[in-house]
Image (cartoon, each protein chain N blue to C red):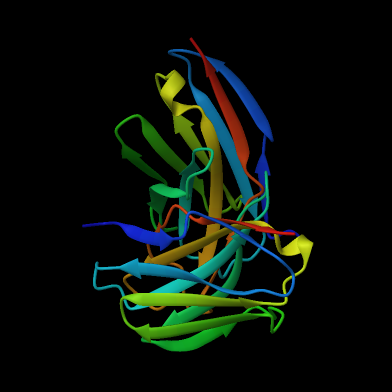
Length: 114
Length: 112
């Protein structure tokens, strides 16, 4: 099973809402990532978890809060977002702790902030 | 400063033709170079990857050519098919620093 699943597929939220994005993989990977992708742009790295510990935070605003409850799950908690945060949020996983190794991406959550 | 430059931005190829996408990098610490394919509304999917100790890697219709001295690498898609129409991203990673850098992407259209 080489699948990374993400829920929900689509999310519309107001600027005062709190919501969470979920990601799951069962490949035994020990590194998991959150990326943000705007239309017609490459994915931008947000966070990296290695062995369930946050190892990279790319200076992401605190309105985004990641969480890794266990080696298979990754959450992204959202609060007080801005319209410019609307984007496709991608989760990925890899076998090693660095993105240099093969990354498997999920289908993404399309987020719209109104 | 853009660390990975990808060209062209868009590419139109006839069915059966060869699609070529090029990337150039500056950071000599990069030691892993993957290519991703992304269809609209989907996440990127790893196509093929190469390490700098080899000059070429082929998987089916997809080939990566790597020129370490020129700090360039390219993706060749042989016998291009309409189903190959997608956005392609090159990337470069420093496996010690733990980060990947993506190129800006190339939108490939293969005409039937």
